[in-house]
Image 1 (spheres, rainbow, N blue to C red):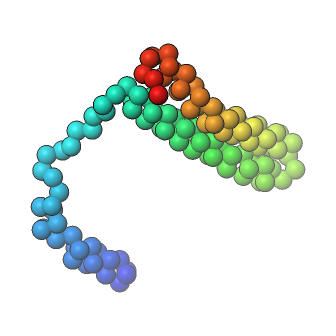
Image 2 (cartoon, rainbow, N blue to C red):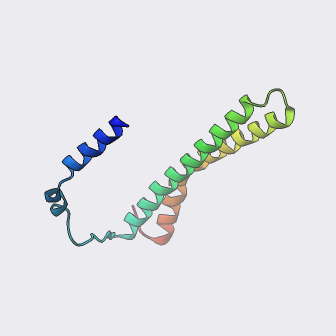
Length: 110
């Protein structure tokens, strides 16, 4: 409890009213200059999302497989989840290729 109070006091000491004045008053608008930049951003997000989901499936599949306790149905569910994770990782690797094809179809170039 004492550590929590000390952390709160340190946070209040560091974040003073003068620090709040250094932040911009108007919100910044995030805008992109070209379609190529949008497609590049989509590529980055797509790869990150696919890899994250594949990691979740791999973790769940591994846990199911380890905790199956010899039950063949649970072992099969764990293997299926791990196969889904492998498929997700393959999609994450291929996502930049798909987005590049889309970029050339739209005519955005490289």
